[in-house]
Length: 181
Image (cartoon, rainbow, N blue to C red; front, side):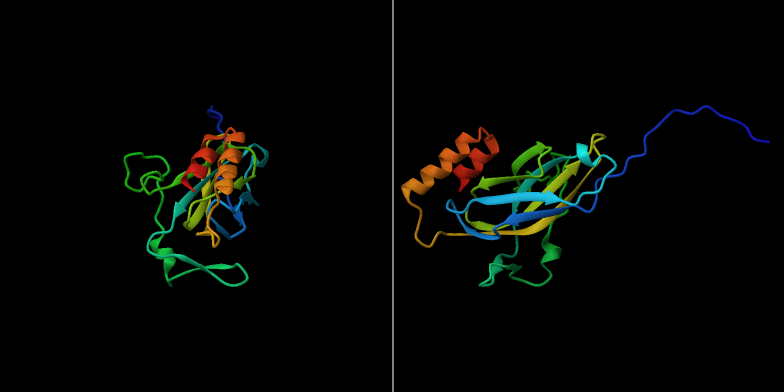
């Protein structure tokens, strides 16, 4: 016959999946161009409670190039093989995001987007992490942006405006990114 056994209650929780990261524009100039970052299309049991963090990494072993239309592409084939498996938790790991040269450009927040960010010259990829209330998390990556040396150089006024805008945000990460640029 059938029998009943007491058990503890539990919650089955999956990780957030299927997110997309966007960067606009994909090609710009250091200090001059203001970049906007966003994420969308995440699927989770707790979609309205997801938090998002944005990270910037320099490409290693390849550079980004661009078409006249502003579309970017990697400078070599098989570039995916050069993308590291990022360790988000173990600070002593050589693959930890910080040890790989990653920069936090926006800490955990509910907002799916932010903008008015300046970046230093370089070829980058952006990683967005999504985390639900039970701390289940996952990430998505996009190649870009490509940030070039400004053709006309950087005026004192443009550099000052970038720093002032970052100070006005009261965001330490925005200030550090502006100083870096």
